Image (cartoon, rainbow, N blue to C red; front, side, top):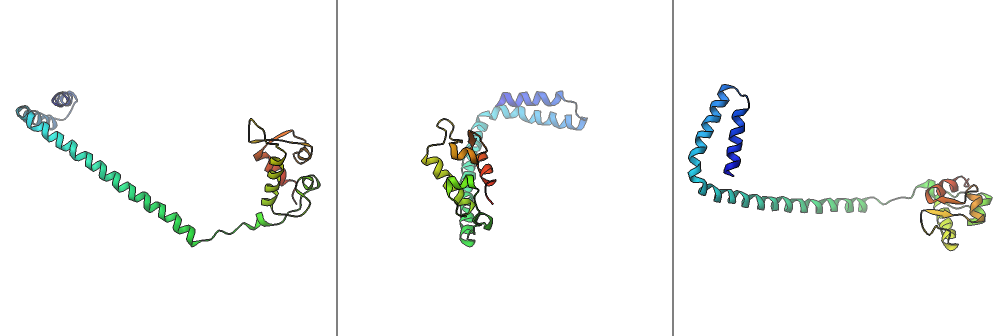
Length: 166
């Protein structure tokens, strides 16, 4: 630690400073010289400072943990206050086209049920790609729905299905 102080003291006079600041630097250097005798006294003090910093870090960590608990309570309170209502647009019965009706049936049903029935058809006939699960390999019925495409991603599938609903 003493060498670090000496290095810091050497760097300060090297920088150009006004005369008043140089005098202050010289005074601090003069004060540090007698302190070398009390180096043994400063080392235990430094250990005390380090010891004090560690509990302070623990206190900060202890303070953060209750803050997380408070944050966890807030969303739970919001769920209790407001009940979620379904979006009317999703629940509106839609009539499937003839191509889509061959897969899910001709009865009008909400978009959510259409998606469920298409996925049931895909899983029943094992049309999901084995290597890339996001891709759907179309059979003859689904090729008509997918516009003649042999393979479609599940995100593109929803777009293509929405075109077959009225």
